[in-house]
Length: 187
Image (cartoon, rainbow, N blue to C red):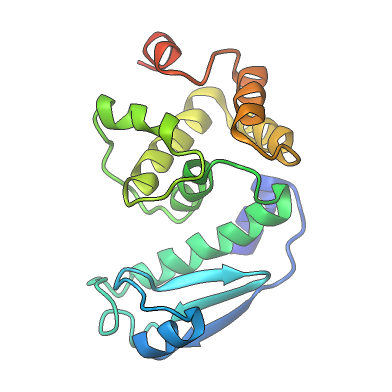
């Protein structure tokens, strides 16, 4: 069902993915070649998803709800779909936000001060990126429609930097990706 949902949203065909179930934190660390944070339970590489076995999910991570396994799996599948659709040339907040949006990993809406930090996170990464991204993706799709969002993704497919993203964003939404226009258009 995830494959069909993503194919419908992006208008593309996605070949079935390979899912590798991992048995322990030690195995994750071995594959990643580094000590990993307890929240890390899944990732993608090419058309493959590596994820902690659902039977080990709450034992080998700081995730307490076993149902989160399915949300993480869908989140990672969405990464593969985004990559197929428009490559990696997109802001990190947009990438993680779209994955959280599809996986229904609802985040608490940050306050205005936090929301404005999105302008600092083109490629940066921290825990806030998921909540900021979820809010912005949801807002752009709900307020302006899926078609405009897809148009933005198409425009940034070959754009390698933040300056090009800002230009593409304005071309689609007709307001600047800035703190000033955030107050005028969004709030």
